[in-house]
Image (cartoon, rainbow, N blue to C red; front, top):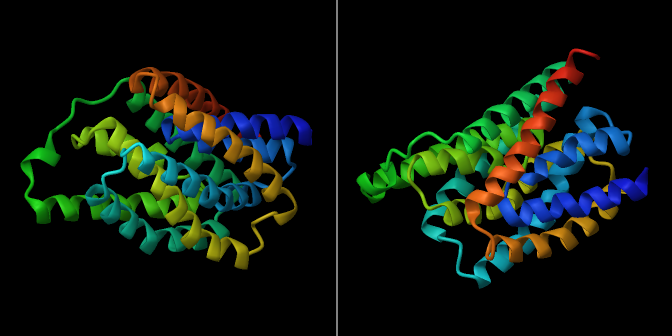
Length: 248
């Protein structure tokens, strides 16, 4: 089981590096192959995203694919709320967490596959309005990350695309976002005993291997092709999570 979990962690890392949204798959993998509870799976996955986020951020920065004027407000907002989300997680029933996580995955994957037409808000707003909009995105995404253990890109990327931000810049922001929500949310998760330190280092090391591969893929393969493949896979897992919730 651990060997298979390791191989799938590499694949998860590739998806994180390539698209910014694949990390959510680590949660059901930890639950099924790692034998962790849903709270432990979410907490352990979120903790690992700090390291994958750092590596992905450094690599994306080398490619010049991070727009810090966009990224900083999103990350600032998420830093404020991901701890709160993790605290709520500790008092939420496992079935509810499965349903919430599954619903987020399904909705985000659906909109990635059938995206709403961009509103070009990003082009019409002045500097202050643009900042406030990005801050609001960060506040909402941060809470959901802390609550469910997702890395953030699953929600932030579709929202930013709808607002009219460039796809690669949105993915670049999501890579930095991983580390920020992991720091804030993990403070709560560690205090509540939801991070399995016996498993997280093994998973993280292999994720990092995959991230390095995924980042290179992201800059060679069309973004829409990547999004379609990863979103389809996430959609399947999202439906699985919702079904599993009602089997508890």
